[in-house]
Length: 354
Image (cartoon, rainbow, N blue to C red; front, side):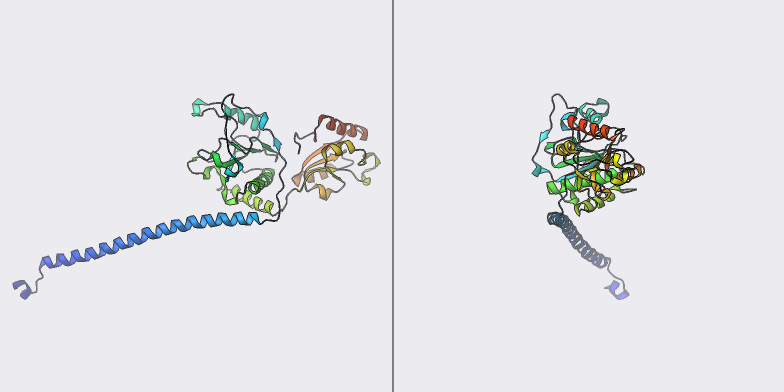
């Protein structure tokens, strides 16, 4: 009564007021935390659903594409690479493949599948590496744009830790670090190969990942320039989408380019002259430089008097693999072609057939 009369407040009352206020604030904080947790769960579910819908959309867009991506030219070397004498890779069905993994070899471009297969097969105790059954990659893309298939698609080879059973490994020769990216030929044929694999295996572009993008894989592969620096991932993906639309695709496998009358009678060859070669290898035959530009491989028949070196260079700049068959005279040129038929070789310069 004395405190009330003098205007003093009972400390216990203040404490109670403070406790009540703190309790209210704590209750509000708990409610906000619950709402935050709920929103975080909703956000996670929405992100998962968005990712799923994006994948479905890409699959549907891919399914409705009218353009059919042709199979790229490649050399099958599966049975010509070193294998472990005992160990064997597991097998899978094509329907189990859902992703494509992009690699770089992290080595000089001159290091090809043969040497890499040896390195993969042999154990390396110093690096803690065990022996593998065979090369890890399914496809190998050389700097000049040559593609070699190094494993059957059904082979679950080692190339992405913990994710081998559902991935296809596509390796680009070279080390793409410090500003270096694949050659233009590698990007062109790599995009063609991946676009074709996506079509055949029903894989959307959203499931084409660099090796480093797979969980539990602490690696820089396919190089620091994949999604940093020059971002060759973006260049590759843009080219893949162009291939899916049929833009810039080489729609002819092999064109046999002959000289015209302007090159002189000594440089003219008729279809009759070349019939054994044509019957054996079934190339498209003609005199059109414009048509030849859309071929993956061009065989030039005759010397520079028939088809100039500048024309040959132009074809190469358009991404064509050019093989010139030219003797000292027309008879020797025909003998060279006859010898190719006898050897069952389509080209002098390229060890590839279709």
